Amino acid sequence: MIFQYDNTSIYYETHGKGQAMVLLHGFLESSSIWKNFIKPLSEKYTVILIDLPGHGKSDSISETHSMELMAEVVNELLHFLKIDKAIFVGHSMGGYVALAFTELFEEKVLKLILLNSTTEADNDERIENRNRALQLLKKQKKTFIGMAISNLFSEKTRLQFPKEIVILKEEVYQFTTKGISANIKGLRDRKDRTEILKKFPRTKWIVCGNEDPIVPISSSKRIAKDTNSEIKILHSTHMSWLENQEEIVKFLLFID
Image (cartoon, rainbow, N blue to C red; front, side, top):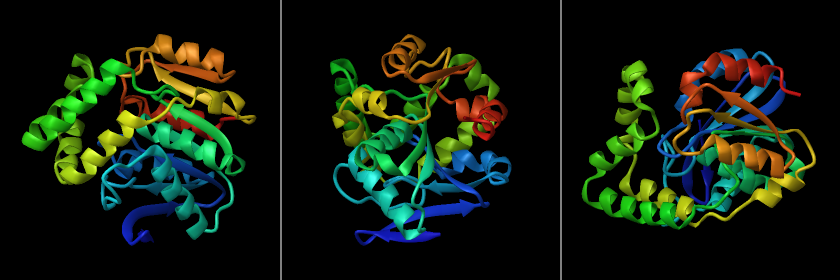
């Protein structure tokens, strides 16, 4: 399904009945990452999927897709669907969007689950890497996508999920350079939201991978402690939605 945000087409899906649960994908992903989550979760929840701007079947909105802008898009979708409150689950960049949403619309967030994500802003080294990524994207889009997606996996998981990685790359090759660029800039410029998570008064979880190369487990443990969040440690790298599907589904069905 498509709805319009500021004359921009945004793709979404809804499945099932019950309490609303919004699943937010990460950078260089789309709502398709959740396809195996739909059937089990929709037995308990109204599952809401969205392709964030510049990803999947959604168009780009501007030169920079800030986390706040994407949170506004999600809010407009909920308004369009007449949903007042929801549980939010965000993978990586989706977690950053969920945190921005919590800052802007805290009363609408029933529970907050950050999956392979962080409250922290990019450090200087990561910012420099983002700027280099923008340059490579401009010159060699396919090379950039191939490298970026491969780096989300460990050597072991690259061998374990070769077919799924090819499918993911083939989908992302269809994303526009403008959309990818806008999201890199949004990631680079995002602010620290540790205090937002700390002040959030309801159920909050940090779900992390013990071998995550993007969000180190030491960082996740520290943030969980500093923000009084519950923590769940998975045996996974950054792509736990693929590596630990059954475990995450079970967790989301029985989360308190």
